[in-house]
Length: 278
Ligand SMILES: Nc1ncnc2c1ncn2[C@@H]1O[C@H](COP(=O)(O)OP(=O)(O)OP(=O)(O)O)[C@@H](O)[C@H]1O
Ligand SMILES: [Mg+2]
Image (cartoon, rainbow, N blue to C red; front, side, top):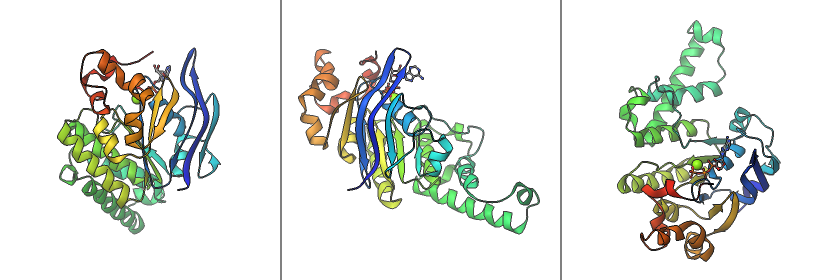
């Protein structure tokens, strides 16, 4: 499989904190690649580096072999990388449909002049965009909320709306930052199915950060494990699950805490904020 995204010796310092430490890893085209690691391991910072929110202190990020370091976030979206956020970022006062229409309209050439005058072209654009946005809500199973304000949606559905919005830009690479956060086991299972369907139906590669180990182990391969900003391990779910370093560094703390055995399944849940934050 070709590498869609490559990170080479990627490092990000915030003052004295090294959030990402010489990380070298990649996302293969067509894969659902997972990133796991304790709280504060640097996972979200990696997304912020890929999407141009932060510039790396050193290191390279290549999308289809070409550097994207220094590109503005909107340019990186234009190159086919979109994301959802760990802390949901929707336009709360807009309806669900409008939340998905906004990025679509940004991609559609239609002058302000013709939009204001409601020219036939502008009306056509509006109809097409509306239909496309609706089809994305249908794909996420939230079409019945199309006219509801985003802020009124239950938390889990807001996460699905974020995925719909991220898909509107027709990405090659979709970055999902804890899409199952706050979901119960049943909701998490159905989200896993949904992500697998999105992966197939939208022909998109996915890089997914999660603390829900069942979800990662079921749909991601390979799984990248980060610890203290650095790459700890990478491999198939079963390889990562059995890796002593992973158990010791990330999952072992459950053992120390006297909870479930140090299996990846035990690493999710309510105690995740008690982890190895520096
Ligand atoms: N803008 C920032 N300024 C200073 N420090 C930051 C900034 N962003 C992240 N950090 C620090 O970098 C480290 C990595 O944070 P990051 O949010 O990437 O971790 P994470 O793996 O996503 O954790 P979690 O699982 O809790 O979401 C942490 O020590 C964090 O406090
Ligand atoms: Mg994070």
